[in-house]
Image 1 (cartoon, rainbow, N blue to C red):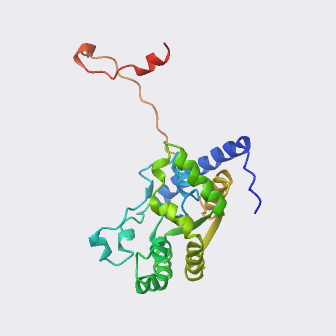
Image 2: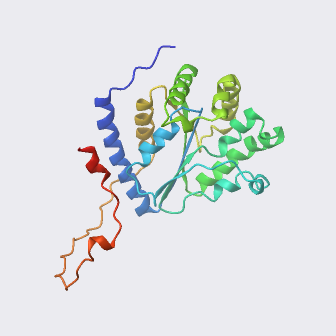
Image 3: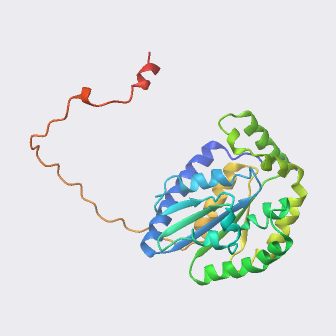
Length: 267
């Protein structure tokens, strides 16, 4: 497969800024209309999900748009109905929730790594479409994105992370094991799509060998699927500062200040 040509920075950055401005408009529409939005990000390790979520939320209000990235379930959560630990994170009116991996863990890593039984896996494939139809029927705007990365590009990203001390934390032994289980994950993904790519909540595949293209394409598509419009912001007049009433600031030596590290950079 030929290498995907990277989107030039001088094209990528202005378009990303434009789309992020539209995301702010979407946020205000969600808040004013009391809409509920759920965006599911799935895909292989190092497919670009996290960096895309970062760009989506960069200028959004964290009280409106929040990221859900759940850890390994506790012993108690393992005894619950599988979807139970996810339902408590669903949005209320005026909220956007972005799932950095979601209930689809059961159809992916749990299936491939043997963390669930065949019965649990089969039950998931049966219940998931029902669960998602219930969400949509209740008015939740559900969008599901699968980030597709090639085996060569995934390996290149893994190697890059191993050599970068700032990103080394992103790698885990399970991430690296996904290289040896490439075909197993492929089969699991294909079977997952057969059962869960439903008209009410279809899967949208994002080609992500070029992260810049993936981010632009995913955000543009999300915006195109929601009938938002610009909301007139409330008028907030800046009040006049009142005249002073005799307040005097305490002497500086009575407080502990952070050392001026920046000054040492100029020496």
